Length: 296
Image (cartoon, rainbow, N blue to C red; front, side, top):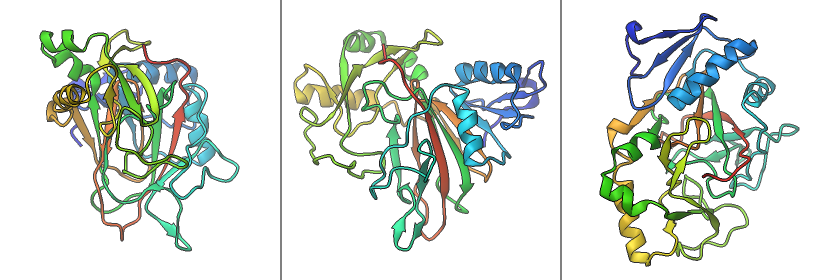
């Protein structure tokens, strides 16, 4: 992981350290136990969340109840979406979503398997998408399964003035047909026509409600559609915008360790996952902070 030297560290009055990654987004929070957060420490953590968009907290020992309690400091939680297997949640804990390739008795215990998860924003196909997601590592493979994050602030700020004028006021349909692993969502009829696929329509350029910064809100590429444009024109403009997403200057890659918790702002970031050997085990538990308003 690429963390800046100690000269770049910010030290809060509560002695937690905020260590920026040196990339377009992301910071590691040190000297904190998420099971024992007082209000002042959480306020510092929340400021860091708004400043850096993605936070990494290592060496945590969290039960599912601890993960839920920490996540609730950010707001009300969503229930986990239905997985490809038709299972919805951990028994008695509907807030917990399992991301895993592990199978028990031939049935997957979680979602997304061992393949690549393409660039996406979590559940942007909803009318009020989640504010944030928290992912906690229980088991990780010896290699692969890294998660990369991309700053939609930085991409928007880099666009040429002419391109910004072209996209101003446009709305984009965020597809709800497939998840980031390419699996069909439960109860959805497959389609690859973005004009008729299910999903929510959001502004292409949004203003973050907490920071006031402008950002692109792309969601995911498959079945995306710029409302009101000819399909070919929509595809060409979206391809032009998506060409920025894979550029290294806008991203940070995280190499997981057991006990890592990463929480990211779904409104101003996208993320992806590298594939890994399906013979290895990877178990992650995720919570999502519920959205209350549409992107604006």
